[in-house]
Length: 103
Image (tube, rainbow, N blue to C red; front, side):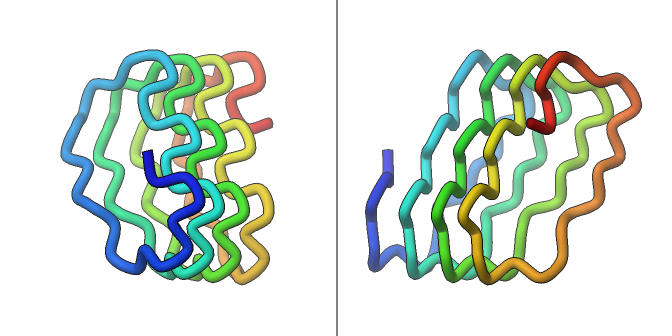
């Protein structure tokens, strides 16, 4: 949706709490000016739902909280790949994991 939006600084709110397969896949990939991620309040995740979401967001320094405790297959795959400005990772409170969820 916003893939490659180099000037995007303020992301939209994402209030959904129940996600479907691949719904936010790559949404902010290559948004090189994004420094702060939007809140991600979802607690029910689906396969690939946040996969590649912030890939190559090279200015991202404030990652979102990841409140889900039950993860789906590939849900966080490569979520922060290439985020070269991140110095602290979000907490990972999940207690029930699925295949490749943190790949």
